Image (cartoon, rainbow, N blue to C red; front, side):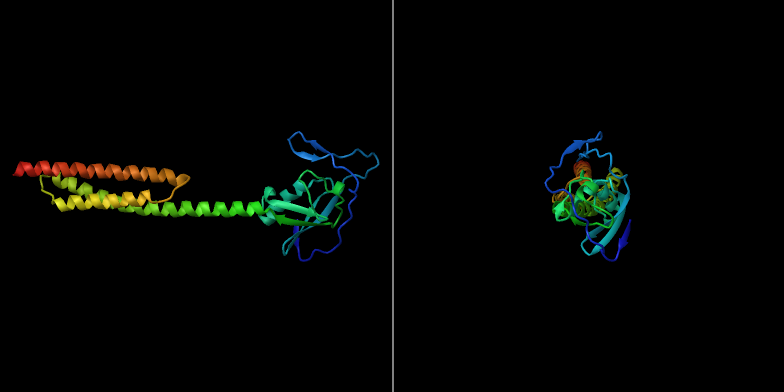
Length: 229
């Protein structure tokens, strides 16, 4: 396969007029055009098919007995389009994957037009938005996780201070609880789907666990304060 600078040549004529297309199922489950047995038919040969895709021009070498579906597979590497995202037009008509090139009149240097399936464009756009949303959510979760880790360090420091018999100011406890709840609210406001959803749930558990630790500190502090009174 090679990319060409011009389409060149002229399309070969078709010999389909007045003939009903018959189909058969291959062992692999692919529906293909039924080929009539012709003892006098020439052996298969390799043909070069010129593909026009917008402003780009390609040329593929395939067997004359190949199907349009096989041509799509060859074009995937060049265009980045999966076979299901491609539509091949020959002589003004969209060709099915199971139709044979030779039975449709395709000959050496015949021209085929490739267009992208409009529905695939929409699917790609939706997928790009979904991925962007997940990445944005993951960044937001990472920010919340960083803040919660800092608060957890403060909780640990307070617990150590209390265990050493030191008094802790009420405002220090309430401030930590308020800061933690703010992070929990931020977490709940992050739209989630896919893998990021599990991260959100884990981070929520971390927030609630840290909150319980701080509440335990608050109770312990009050008990210690009553012992001092």
